Length: 303
Picture 1 (cartoon, rainbow, N blue to C red):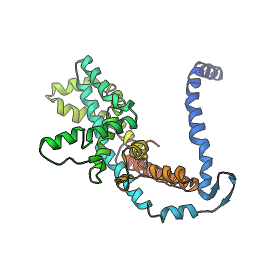
Picture 2 (picture 1 turned 180 degrees about the vertical axis):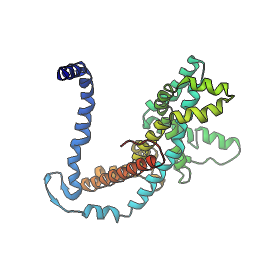
Picture 3 (picture 1 turned 90 degrees about the vertical axis):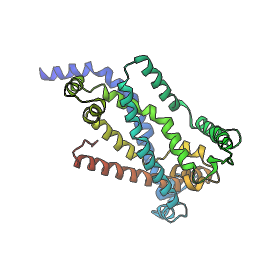
Picture 4 (picture 1 turned 45 degrees about the horizontal axis):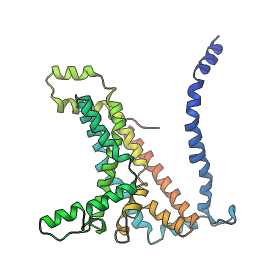
């Protein structure tokens, strides 16, 4: 009898299994099957010979990577940009979600949400054009500002000491609104009776946020932070490719642009695969360590 019940239950959920199928196929085709191509990191890959006919070189590509002139600069830039993006960009969506949740006017809330989400749908090519127009020393707002105060205009996009700030601020502006979606969804699950009890006890809005709102969504915050740490070796390929130039490349060159330049530009496919494998290993270690640390301090993890 129990067996018949189980079969009937599975038939009820068969439509949900079909809904899962596109996502499963996506990960199999575009995530798991390409992993077999990582073998070229241990070969001197020749596009005409193919993967299996190319000569084995063992760890030679890794030695070239670690002892190359650009490796440590690229590693430093990648980690620096990623860490600052996390420190600056991660808390802002949480604060925005809390503020949006506190809004009582539904119409005004929807308008603000639309304005916050809009930059996410713009490509980095468009964002790059906006940044160039904004910070242009000739006809941009920055140039006008400098001339208004009698100062010589500075090309912010072509200065080594200012391009880093442009990278961070443009990323926060583009993605902070979109990142609020998950936190807003988490806030809808907070029990409203907790706020009512807090009001009776005399807690103001700030105390309600500190002692009720943030602890209630702490699990989601920790989960998103761990996932963000897992992407620490991906500092934003499209963004850096669009914003960098010959002057600022040394300051903001990251692994993704380095792979693009070496792999596609110079045809070093084995070398670029080696860099990607190194990134994946570091990302796995970072996620594992963050997960263990989260569990050790009493939080939730992902494993």
